[in-house]
Image (cartoon, rainbow, N blue to C red; front, side, top):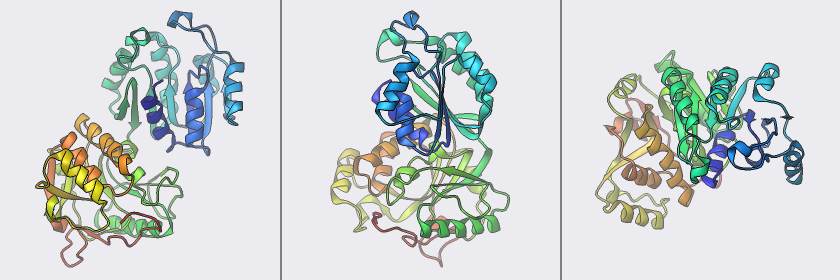
Length: 389
């Protein structure tokens, strides 16, 4: 497993409370997930037999356990048996399933049939060895063939991330819904107000929240995710991967809905993303002092001009397709370069991976209450100490 494939697995593991890995080998990926999310209950399943048919030695159960012990990690359960046998006894609902066991057509299909029904709605699965490997001897074409056939009929499962020969899918809860990210007491209170306003103006719309604590209010689904940065941008920029909806309305925690806008979801039948144009309109006019000059300069250099449309990122509508999957995954990658505000990373991602944008007027998302027709954005009112401007 390459570094980028391991990174994908780590990102997916952070939002999972029950993790199962089929095919542990020496336990490297198992350890990566446990280190990424120490609170998760992690289970490994492996028969620990010979792997001569795949061109290398298999690992023993003792080796796998010794490697975990060396790191001070103990999985909830390490089941030394075939995945077929383990499936008969495993009864917990799974948040993240990592399939990397048998690679024959029959074995992959059996693991899909036996284990995918155990993944809860909103949960995820990662398949390894999907596509061409970095070494020809590691190519497993049967995996891609079976996964592609499965995906044709499993429309509730949507691809959310891809790296190397790892591909991640999430089990969608509903066709449309709202998503909020909230860390810290101020943000949680702000998110509660946002949800109440959603219920008032868009009744019946499912709501999912992401954070390290659930909200004491009627959100329909809570996604646990550890707190990674003061501004919560590490999680925000992964909204595409985390959302359990086919069409998503993302709201910052400092937003208040003041009017209905179900037309946002209608627009997503024709566009990839719905964004409000910033009052400054053009990147060259932006003078927000909290932006990092070095990042702004680098963004302009990479785009090639500052005379481009500038968008707000506090309210975003998006649908599911490959353009969006690539764009949103790149937004997170771009954010990691500076790790502060998300706006410049958004601009670079839009330039590198263009999507079809429905540009909304300022009234759709504005910090001016008298102008708001959909969302009044109370900018910076829920920020924590240390959060970027």
